[in-house]
Every structure is written in C-alpha cells, then in structure tokens.
Length: 277
Image 1: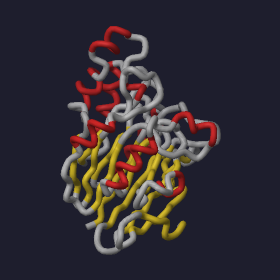
Image 2: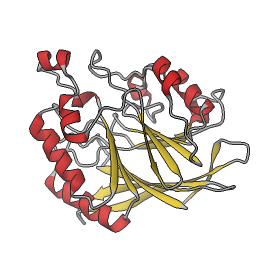
Image 3: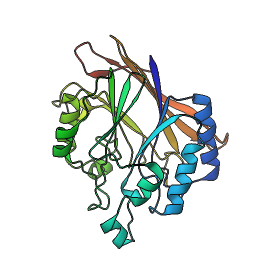
Image 4: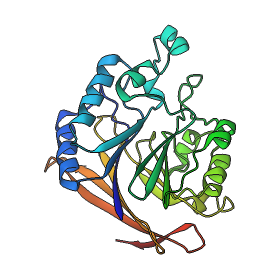
C-alpha cells in the first residue's frame, strides 16, 4: 500500500503570505495526501491568534489526517511568565496534547512518531530527551517508521551547522537502531534531503533525512522560495520512497514540482538513493 505524506514546515503564522496560503490549499487538494505533517514553527511569536490562524489553515486543507509538533517559535519569547509556567499552552489549545516523550500515529503501512525537540530552556537550539525516549519508544509493528521533529539532523550549508539538533549523532544512532526509515524536520528554511549515511556513516542502517523549507512565510532565505515536500512511501520486500520538493512559482501563483529523489531499502535494512528524477 502506498502512503503519501504532505510535509509542511515553518509557516510562522503572523508572517504568512496570503497568496501562498491559498496556493498550499490548492496543492493539498490536488496532491491528495493520506496525511499532512507539520514540523514546527507553526507561529511567529506563539500568540493565540497566530495559533488559531494556523489551526484554521490546517483544517482548510481538506478532510485528511494531520499531525503537528511544536518548534522553538511556538514557545513564548517575550511573555516570560508564560514561558516559565506553561510554555506549550498555545500549542495544546489548538493542536492537542504535547507528544512527550513521543506520540505514535499510523497511516496505512507507516507509523509516525512525533517528538518535541524544543525545550523551553533553549531559545533556538534543539534537544531531545534521549533517555526518556529510549525508555518510552512505542512498540511499533508497522512496515515503515517515520519520526517527526522540528530541528534538523543534517544540513546543506556549513553556516547551518550550529542549527543541528544538540546530540544529533546519538539521536541518529538511536533512530537507526530502532529501525526508523524517515526523519522529517525543518527549522532552517532550507529544504534538503539526504540519508543519515552522508553525515553519520557509522550510525547503522541509514534512514532518509528530509527537511522542508518554509511553506507560507515571507521569512524565506535568499534564493530559496516557499516550498513543501510530498513523500510517497511503498512498503514491501523492495520498499521505495519518493521525496518530491514543490516550490512556489511567483508568476503562476502555484506550487510546482522542483526536484525528486527516489530511495530504495535494502533487504538487510537501510536506505540508499536509487535515482534522481
């Protein structure tokens, strides 16, 4: 059974572009995903109105299952009492219970684990409670497994090295040992897809690491448009994964396919790039 995941990240509601929001809605209907995944920085300043706008946006994408994790921008920055006493209140009010230490959802042959990588003690850098995860990871049983968190485990540019998850190497080893096939994230507004073998060759059977750019915010990086990923997974003896990046076309005011990478899982486990389309 094929499973299609629409991977959105970093909308930063409060800085959204109306025409791009409309284009994501159109794309979600056209691409007909089985689940929509939102990997953090849902809001710009963790304000209730921004969370409400983001929740409305997600609801407008169609009658499709969705899951979301918070990012560092979803914790109040200037409201210190709230940051200290109830930092995830806005997220819980509009997106449900916080996945601590992890929450599991299944769609078809894919189990998705939501993780929180933005402890309130940190303003920007991400970190996971690896000890808590090791003791509490769900049992699984699905043919394919994916992890969703906000902070990246790999990056394209040297200038983003400091943005990698703290303890990323240990996290990758844990994920590979646990049989994770795919890790979804964002944070740096620079879409990038690799396997864990590129940066962590000794971590174990490689997983695919996919970062999405900012889907609707004007806070794009120079030369990088608004974008999202569509990921098609096929379980079975010869499991495959197609990761498509869709970029916003300013002239056409719609998202267009910009790049595709296909991966195949070896019989003994671990993913490698099969072909660039």
